[in-house]
Image (cartoon, rainbow, N blue to C red; front, top):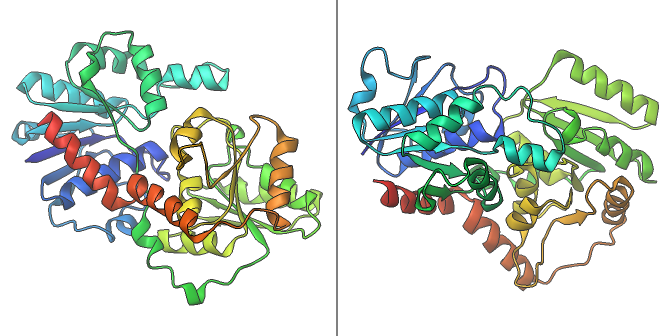
Length: 369
């Protein structure tokens, strides 16, 4: 099968949704299908991520019209698009040629508004995307079940229930496997991985470090690095008497080495479509504290009684969050039996490894082809 991806990327960053689209394209190509990834700009970190896949069936085409102007799109059997513009093109191609199309959603405006309590301002193209999803007859792919619930409510029954698909994004477990254990030295540090935006609560790692007697260094890893970010972190850390380090745009291997060297991953985001960093930490069996969001309960619950490896703080309760971080830094986290650790690893490998992802992708391709 020949698959055309239509993805509008942002220069200098690769948000979780665009990462999901890239990983889906690489996985489909590795499964033996011919994939053309059409985009306005080459995805950030593409070379670093692609080295972990067989890319013999994968090619990138830079075209802001996604193959429309030269008729390139007519050669393909399946169209997959990321919001918003790419998804509009993919569903349009599918409707015109009467071939299947999948429109990825990640996070609907309704979900963002409902959970964050603020309007989804600045979400360009979503009115057009809503029309494309409801009028062109394609499939709608969400990252999580929680996300799909909100997408279905947003689209108000105008898309048949059998057209909704769900697929977790994977982490790069192949990079984790390349981290050499003998080179990992545990350090008195905590790590934060995200963009430095308000709802991600980037200041929390500094507050956690400042409140603990051991004064761990706060490490910040960010793919989207503005020139002023480093100064912002350094000045805030200095005022709080905390040592910090800003590490922009690390490779996958470097990132996972830092995670494994850390005592704790601090992830105080108040909204997530999936939340890759806590999954990455849990896969490495590194403690992580997160706020209590329904999507986290879905993603991280591995036991029949609601057990999670990550530590969940009361939502928007900063005191509880910092307290739970302190307990982990004090070594008060209960020691898990080997059988329990195996259950945890099975959960994350089945749902979030590249290999598990590819099995789920095959199921979806069989459904839509």
